[in-house]
Image 1 (cartoon, helix red, strand yellow):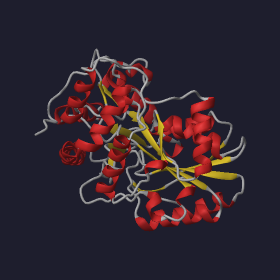
Image 2 (tube, rainbow, N blue to C red):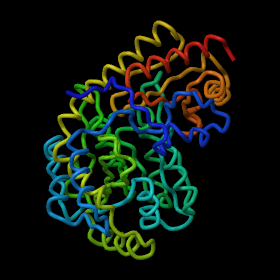
Image 3 (cartoon, rainbow, N blue to C red):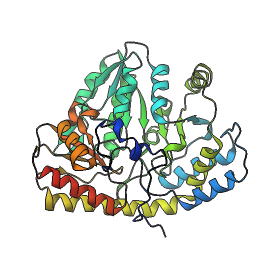
Image 4 (cartoon, rainbow, N blue to C red):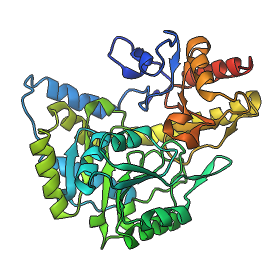
Length: 395
C-alpha cells in the first residue's frame, strides 16, 4: 500500500538535509548523498496529506490553538493503543520542538552553576543546551560492550549523590546508540535519581521506531505515584516524518512546574500556539497514521538487515549491531582510520556520502559514525557502496 522504494527528489524544497549539507561540511560535494539529519526520505502517510489539503482549501491561516478535546484525544488515544500508556490531557504542554523544551526545562529546574547529568555519547543538542544555560555538564558515560551499550549505575550513583547535580537528561530510546532500555534498567535509573532528589527529563521522541519484537517502556509508567518528578518529551515528528511541522508535547504532571512552564514559555519567551497546518497534520497522524507506520517499521527492519549484510560482506572490520530502536545506525570504523573526523570529511568531499562523526556526540563516540538509514533501499545501497569504496582506499 505504501511505496517506500520510490525516490522523491527533495531538492528545491528548502530541505535542510539535502540542500544545506554545507552546514555540516562546508566543502561537501553537491552530489553527495546525505545520511545525517534525522528526518526520513519517505512521503508522509496519505491521511496526513489529505487532512492538510482540506485545511489549505479553507484558505485562512490566522493564529491558531491546539487546545481542543479532539487534539488532546488524538495524542492520548495513540499512546494508549501502542503502549497502554494513559496520558492525562491536562499534562500536555506544547513546544515547537524537544530541543528548545530542554532549554526551557533547564531554566526551570536548575540554578546557574548546578549540574545536569548526561549519558554520553548522546544526541549533541543535549550538550548544546547545557552549554548555553549556565549549568555544568556532568558525564555519566555509557559502557560500550563492543557496540552494545549499558548504563554505568555505579558512576550514576556517585554523580547523583552530589547535591549540586539536580537534573538528568535521559534519551530513551537512546540516540545515537540505539538502545531500548529494559524494565530493570529503567527502574534502577529512576531509583538512583529519586533517592538523590535528581529530576529526570526523558526524551522519548523515537519511542515508536522499534525493531520488531522490541518493547519500549515509557519511563513515567513505571512510577505512577512519583511521575511528577519525571518530565517526558514526545512528538510525531520522527515517527511520521513531520519534523518541519514543529510540534512536540511535553508531559508535565507537577502543577507548580506546569504553571512555571506556562509563565516562562508563554510569558518571558513569547511562545504562543502552533500553526494551523501543524495542528491538523499532528492530529491526523495520531488518528490515522498507524497503518503507514506499521509498513514503515517493516521497511526499516529490511534496511537494517541490508546494512548488516553489506558490512559483513564488504567492510568486515566495521563493528555494527542492529539498533533496538530509532532509524539511526552507529558504526565503529576505527579499523579503517585512526582519524574519524578526517575520514568523514573525505567521505563528504570525495566519497559522495555525508555522515556524522561520532565525536560530536561526545568523546565517547570518537570511534563511530552515525548514519540515518530511513531512505529508499536504492539510496541506502548506493551510500553503502560509496562508503566501502572510500574506506577501501584507506586514509
